[in-house]
Image 1 (cartoon, rainbow, N blue to C red):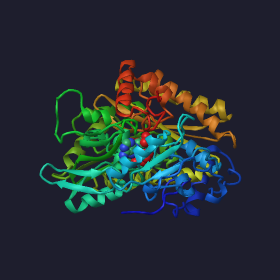
Image 2: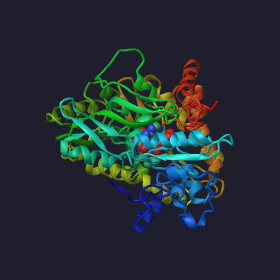
Image 3: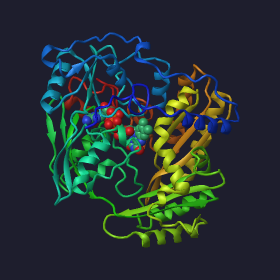
Image 4: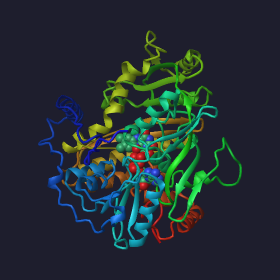
Amino acid sequence: MSRRKFKFWGWGYADEQVPADERARLTAHVAKRFAVDGFGAETPPPTVAEIALRPSRIRAPGSLSDLLGDDPEDRLIHSYGKSYPDSVRAFARHFPEPPDLVARPRNEAELIAVLDFADSIRAAVVPFGGGSSVVGGVEPAVTQDYAGVITLNMQRLDRVLEVDPVSRSARIQAGVLGPDLESQLRPHGLTLRHFPQSFAFSTLGGWIATRSGGHFATVCTHIDDLVESVRVVTPRDVSESRRLPGSGAGPSPDRLFIGSEGILGVITEAWMRLQRRPQFRAGTAVRFTDWHRAVDAIRMLAQSGLYPSNCRIIDAEEATMTRAGDGSAHVLVLAFENADHPVDAWMARALEIVAEHGGDWNRDAASAADGHRSGESGAWRDAFLRAPYYREVLTANGIMYDTFETAITWERFHELHARVIDATRRAIRDVTGREGSVSCRFTHVYPDGPAPYFSFYALPRRGAELQQWREIKEAASEALLAAGGTITHHHAVGRDHRPWYDRQRPEAFATVLRAAKRALDPNALLNPGVLVDPE
Ligand SMILES: Cc1cc2nc3c(=O)[nH]c(=O)nc-3n(C[C@H](O)[C@H](O)[C@H](O)COP(=O)(O)OP(=O)(O)OC[C@H]3O[C@@H](n4cnc5c(N)ncnc54)[C@H](O)[C@@H]3O)c2cc1C
């Protein structure tokens, strides 16, 4: 399994950089959009030597010395997730709260030993999968009540332990990264078919802990749908649910831990539902000049029973920013796939629906099996795959780029869309003194509503990026909540979404969640500040 070192200040491995020509193309494109000549001096990425790291406040006992380490680079790697504010602070060489120690257990016994040690010295423990959180979920920022923080890196638990080809499921350790997971399933002709954009640097346990959303637009959108049973080590006990295809036996024990963001226990393994690898594919890009008609077309598709694997409308602004279009049309990336039978009939019916709503596409290329790799679909796909790496170029050039996402029922979508775009644009203008770019696409579509995903670019004042980002983020989040949306459809709550999550959830549910926390983690060791406050 992969053991390359992660970059501590950005996306990817430490030895990966965006090549100079690609950086130049990207900054030139953004400069053109903002009608500026350039962005001034690019901030070089930080080096380990430049950062004066706070000395570790705790020491590993001899018995755990091969599990717990305080290597400076390792502590830096575990200091932040991968959000815009994380990137700004990394480029500012600002790492005031690194974990004191990083633990890498190889099995449950070692993991329990780490939890026991943390409990004995009153250290907080932050479970860490790939560290791709964009909501402050892995940040070791805790109050003075704790003696220090141990970050629990799960990546040594990286095996597919059993495959059941009859029921088509597998028992998988939680620390496995996406590519390693799929490479272990491939010889069995099976796939988990869960591909978040962060796939390469996120883990099964992280996906379950955050209720991640995969790349596929319909049916099994969230990891929740793929979990057959889950095993969790809590500070109190070990919880393991039965493998069942479904169960009506009271509230679901799995649902207690799916989405628990590391506050109730550490997910160590799960039985996951698998699928055969798809053999049949069809894909194309459909252009719409009218946004409302495009949304109607997608609603019809979502309610048609066709269930496309990709059904992503990208508005004209996002098409421009990602170079998937010239801004003259909204682009629907539409695709079907199946392991059992051809999907041409599905595509043909979908194209009838979009045609009824003014959609237009290249008739010669329609339904090609590799349609998602060419034309506007291909351009957007390339931008999507490279986007995580581009943050380091954008931040280094003083460009603010961030995304946020939600879900809403269809009848309220247009109002939410208008309010959120307006509030975000206004906040960018008020805060930075110039117009920004705010765009929308759908990541997932359900029969009763879409999951809209917003991206924005702005040019903040150098040195004031964090404050200006916070003001824009607050305006956007307030608009989301006021329009009836959720503060997150799949990015999770972490520390950053707490103010809005606290207002969104029913108070009775908050009471139960706090009680569950007290029962399973009585000394509040795990991930303090995420989802609930430590008592
Ligand atoms: C470029 C980019 C693209 C992204 N795209 C998507 C996307 O398409 N869909 C999506 O849903 N999200 C996306 N995200 C967000 C992020 O990747 C997801 O939240 C992902 O599920 C986190 O997995 P991870 O292994 O990196 O977890 P981490 O970031 O390490 O942890 C996330 C949270 O889960 C907890 N945790 C981790 N492992 C465990 C465990 N074994 N047991 C208990 N708690 C645990 C942590 O304490 C933390 O609270 C994206 C992020 C980035 C930076």
